[in-house]
Image 1: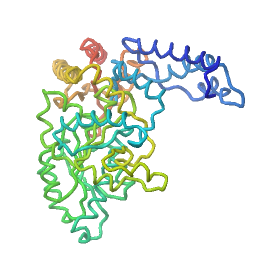
Image 2: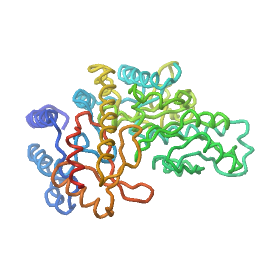
Image 3: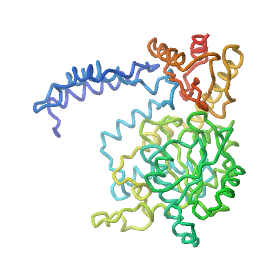
Length: 454
């Protein structure tokens, strides 16, 4: 299985030919997605057995059955959830990273790869205004990043002089109602609780957070203040400067979850909305979203990486060797992982090939499309814009529609391969939602989608 023989040669030709054809798709089609598992099982049930199969047969099953049952998140017609739009350069280099089997744990094993990743982390830190000391690691996604960062927040809180003076409550994090679902899951895993601040306009502000703390009466138990730079459902950027003040007053950790919206730091037209992010103790942005990298890639940064290292560095006799040399950077020390692939390298390659200005232009294009779509929605008497977009998410309603109407509309769009745009919810009401990210999504497509709501 590990030698280059006749079968291997055949696989190389077939798989690379398929990959080349996939890379040449322009635009990438949607495909259908969900299938009945029984139908899939009929085709795949006999493949995993004692004896192997011809590689072209297995690839044929993937091509004819598996791939068409996956909606392509990198299609410019994928407008639901948060899409992806990896550059061709990033996709190509991701293949190279996989072929090279890079173990991205430590400087000892992968100094070159880690140094390249760290150059990208430095670029992101500079855009956020974090100090020269800032650093971190690439992890699998925003959920892993939030878990890792808030674990450091909790352990740092335990070391505060006032840590023993709480009322007996568990450690808590102050969050807004629109914080990402992974934050609630993280707090549960860390045995922390949430002080949830009411946000009638869905934007967490400093004054609202301060009022909630005053009414609560137990500020000493708050280990972290969590802000969102681009909520997933509406793209709203919280009052980062005001929340930084609250965190500072509490002596609490200030974490900014910018998994989707943090990429807006590279867009001059919205950069001022991130004022205060430079005060973050930790910050996350997912390049596999709006920085055009392949799945799975999240950049996790700390203002003081040594604090994270004191929490996450794993102690085992066989790992002593990677911690022997001072000044070496081990990505495994900055998150809850140990084994990791060098998932930041495809982004490094693509940024180096295309330049940062090309990324800024692509991000600005999605922002401009959101504004144009919002204006188009406002111009149609059967539609209602819910709010002006902060970034590239647009929420709107079809006047008079029920939840079933939205579902029928969305299903028909996917069946006809026009777009993937599943319904969302806003304050308990089913609504429609555009999530723009791909720079090749057009206003003509937006108009076609809206026409089908008439």
